[in-house]
Length: 348
Ligand code: ADP
Ligand code: MG
Image (tube, rainbow, N blue to C red; front, side, top):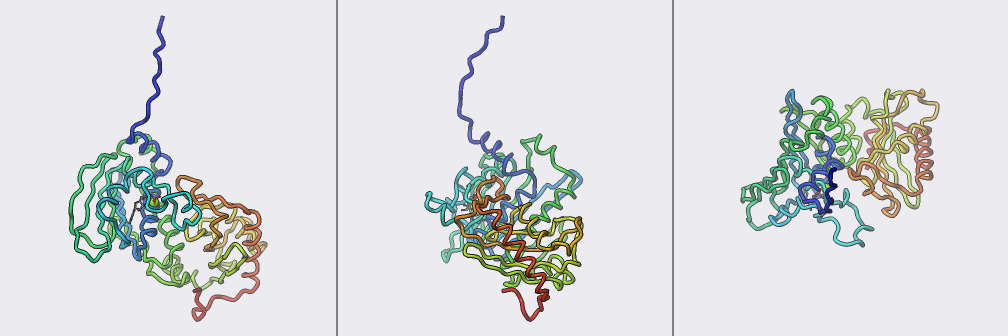
């Protein structure tokens, strides 16, 4: 007869925890890109460059380079530790949080399932050199001095090398790249004040130039033809400000992919808000056609919780129904006024 062995409870080691957490935060190359670019935005970058390398086996290189604040050596090393974040130090910060999230998990998770080479240099007047850190599967292989421009460059290789199940789940390189493209596009539209560049195997796939005019960003990404058929959306309630652009009904599309919504400048997924925008078009659009629209919704921080979902794509809103109603009404009003945005009247 078999004797049952007593099970002992033990605490998972850091590497295992990071691997498990990476499963939640990092689904595919596009999630890596999103996390890294959001960090660049948080670091005050004016320019963010994303470089993807792929071959028949998939995406083998992701590089994000920014000209943001950079990090000194201690912060750089610490940034790969779980729950290390410069964005939250105590609970009161939670209430005034303006950044992309504060979980402090992304870098630790990414480094747990790939090989990361970070080069970073803090924007300072002194001449201390930059720092290079190499981490593979969570193990720090190298920390050294390196000459570097101000800002941060992060190179990801061997993504999911130690999580074969996750790796197997990846789609073709075209599909994975299209997710990356979409992620960068959304981030660029949510942040017209930052120049974005996306290259794939040396070819430029997307480029925007920093501007205060969202219409210009739309023109960089979608071309002038759509950009010239946009109406300005602008509205305000006591707890919400909505700004953006929506296209005339004739510029409709067969899917809702080009309804792009950001909340407090973060690109988010919201089926209900997309539906609210479509509802604003009413019968101007056939049932199976969708508008082109870009809305940035600035909400009182008290009614939005960006940290609900590990990948931070979904946000929790209180007063959701009310907000949907306001958005539908605003879109409807915008279409009725029908004034095409002239180039002399740019969106500020
Ligand atoms: P979070 O963004 O939730 O704080 P991350 O794991 O994404 O967690 O990043 C950890 C910390 O590393 C950030 O809080 C920030 O201080 C620092 N950091 C990460 N990326 C950059 C960057 N590109 N430039 C400057 N600092 C960065
Ligand atoms: Mg982050």
